[in-house]
Structures are given as C-alpha cells and as structure tokens.
Image 1 (cartoon, helix red, strand yellow):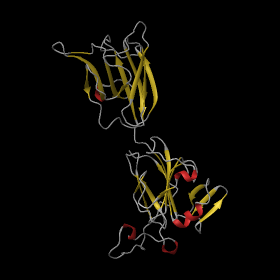
Image 2 (tube, one colour; image 1 turned 180 degrees about the vertical axis):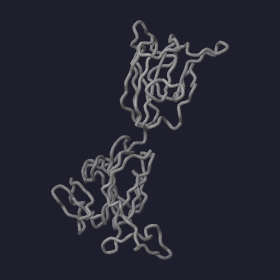
Image 3 (cartoon, rainbow, N blue to C red; image 1 turned 180 degrees about the horizontal axis):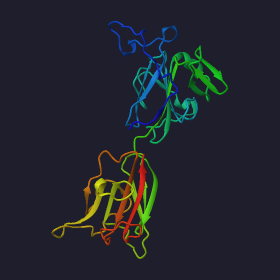
Length: 320
C-alpha cells in the first residue's frame, strides 16, 4: 500500500509553453521538459516502487552519477547509509533496483561507514537521493553533513554550518516510510477466560494472536473457537474470520465442543480438528478499522459475550 511521502525536492515542476517536439530518435531522457537555468533540467519526482522490500527507484531530470539511500530523515555520507551507488559521468539510468548494482557502477556504502542490507526493513523510514556528477565531485569530499535541496542556491552547492545545500539541477530527494504490512495499536483485552494479545509482523499482514488462560480452575490452554468482526463489539454482519472446532466422528458433525486450537496462532492458519467457517480475507485486514477479536473454549454457552461470561474472552484493536 502507498504511504505518506515527504519530499524536499522541487516536485512542482510546471510544464509550460516551452515544451517542444524533440524530433525523431529520442529516448525517454530526450523527451522535452521545462527548462531550468542554462536549458538544463531539474532533477525531480523520485518514485519508489510499492509492495516490495527491494524497490525500483525512478526519477525525472536526466541520468545521474549517484543513488543514495539513508535510513532516517536525511541524506548524508555517514553510517546511516544502507546503499550508495556511483557511476561516473552521469551514466546511471533509471529505474535502479535497490540492492542490484547496475552494470559499470560501484558500491561505496562501506566507504562512509554504512552497511548494505539485503532488503529494506518494514516500518522503517528511508531517504532516497539522486545526484549529478557536478555536485558529487564536491559532496563526496564532505562526509557527515546533511545533504538537502535548496532552490535558492545559484551555483552547484553551498555549505552552511553542517548542511550541504544543493541546487535542484543536481539533487533530488524523497523521504518515505516503508509500510507494506498492516500495523496494530490500541489493543484492549477483556474477559474471564484469558488475556488476549495481538502482534503485527514485518513479513505478513496476518496478525499473530496469543492468549494466556486466566480463568480460575482451568488448566487447558487450548480453545474451541476464535473469531474476528469489525467494530468495537461482536457484529454478526461484519464477521471477518472464524475458526471453530469440528468433530467429524459423529453425524451430524459437532462444532464448538473440542479444545483443539493452541496459542500462538497466526490469523488464517489451518488447525487440525477445526474448520474456517469464514476464511481469513486474502486482502488482509482494512487499515483505519477497529476490530473485535474473541475466543471461547468448549464450555462456553455459545450466547453471552460480556466481560464476565465464563469460558469467553475478547479484545479490541485498531489496524493502521
């Protein structure tokens, strides 16, 4: 899913009457864009591929010499680097896939104390930056400074305190939080049977559910049913997932009467001796939605769902 993005690049580039036909034989980089000083084109519009931990990085404004990826909110030649790739003479063309070194390029991540990770990390914020050769020849000699776009700079760059302010002809940046999988917050457990907990994952949108039996006199930690609905209370009209014990040794089959489901349990998992009455949705849970999760053991009365109901427990949580 797409996430909120913040960009310090000159992304509001306006196409005006200066557009013109470039003539035959032109590739994507030869297509006309609005001119900047001296007819050059502003680097802009960094785009990061969605739904992957190894995204393709694309930009506008011509080929470049450097692609940098820092973990955090700023570009810098320092240990926050997770990837730094260079190719002389603005020979880097887009798209470039994170972690895949383009032909003829060099990986300089370790030269500035950074460490390349095989993939980007879920729920982490990264700053992606693209730089031209004119700026790189100076920036590469000035590590541990913040690197940022500044449209007021008339030359290539200016150094101000601990910040390198670079003309948008030579630099574009994008800061973005990587958020492929759903997250949970505001988990509120209730009920006599057990204390429920829900955990998010950095590899899947199927949440992990655990429970600890708290009802006096019970020693069996297994349960007979678990379910999920939308909202702050049980609603049969918004059932999202149900896993219920099933006994096929008798006819007709008997449900809810065997404790066969153990903790921990990943939402959507199959369990021997149980059946999914409502299959966990392939599209996962909805962001911006509150959910009601419930569990019961074989001795639940099958009707009441209050905090004091024996053999029953529930929790509410919010997905974002």
